[in-house]
Image (spheres, one colour):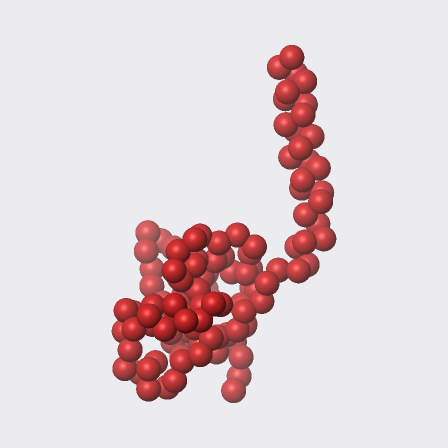
Length: 120
């Protein structure tokens, strides 16, 4: 009986891994402006808003940015690697491809698959 259950679990894992092949090409893509960056417990995070004025960006603080994020459905924190954290500055427009999973918070926290700077 234990062998049957083990076989079923392994089969489910293998089959679910195969079925995700097509989904990997359709990750969501978000664009916005990096407004805040932080390091917590050796994890690098960006806060990206879709819309922010230059005045709000220059004069705002984290609380202001979070308040603005409440009205922007795609606003989010993103986990990034150290290289991206160090190479992208606050105020830079970015295009982010994110993983499907996100931590449910306001704003949500997503994991970056790829990030690129947008020249304006």
